[in-house]
Length: 252
Picture 1 (cartoon, rainbow, N blue to C red):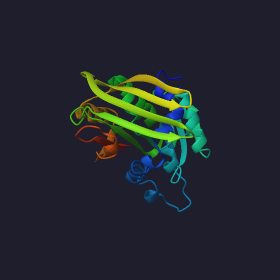
Picture 2: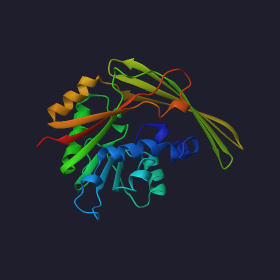
Picture 3: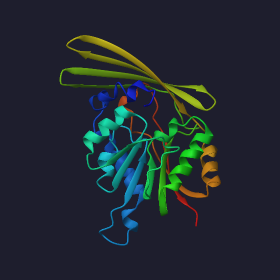
Picture 4: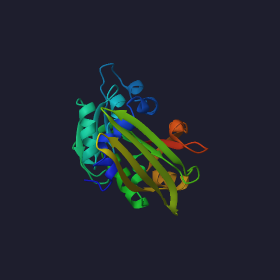
């Protein structure tokens, strides 16, 4: 079980303050960037995808339309969400740095989850484990904030369902050379009144050269693309939310 309240005791709020539609654009772009179907030899080819740090399964709701999905996470609360909305997928509890799934995949993806690694060695272990789960010519997708592009922000998320209203305020702030904190305050209102909860996540923040250096060290070729508008409606101050997406393959 993880130590993050947002992903355990408060995991039930995930699809009150967000919806499956919120994942559609990013998930669709990731599927397109992997380009697995276009490279298949037959129309009946059904590629296998391993999602490290699958969270509540929002991305998987769209990934499963193109892949046989296996999700891995260390948060029991989020895994329970994922299993409910994606009964077709396989979900496992495990640490992305060390878990052994027991099969090989056409793609291994880390949409935002690898950023929770706070040391370069942790990132290296997770990438090595991803590579160990790849089929020949398989692909690894990594989403990161590079230190050069990161912008501290305040965010707000809100929603209501079955008489429960949830508002989440989040503040992102750089706290060290290689990390920022995501500090969260939840306001939960129901017939009993108001509950207030807080949670703080420490997230890794590394320069672009650290990422590309790791890819080189691990003998990966890579291509990159960018998105910066996914959280526009949630940002309370000026600026955007730039993210870099790396699609990696093992060198021949």
